[in-house]
Length: 128
Image (tube, helix red, strand yellow):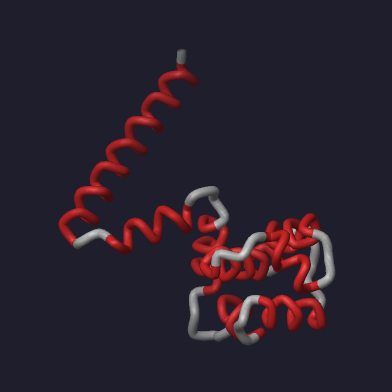
């Protein structure tokens, strides 16, 4: 849960174009502490979460939304948020969103081909 909440903070921060340093300054903490929150290494207290939400111009529930709701597939949401922590993922998603549907299909096909080739090379190295 700490990882998912940290990922939600990171996604919101990056979406707004706010640096870890700027967020930390607004909250009166170090940027290293923001890194620890975003990585799930440190648990965010409720009072700190309120500060972070205010700095990110959202409601606390907006950040907690991924953890809430019995009708939601929480493990899938957490997996998605963990994948969004991959460097470049948010930028890639923004660029993907700007493409038309034909270009999106072509890009997904290219990425599937590249990942299949990378997996095959990896398996070949292990066998060799």
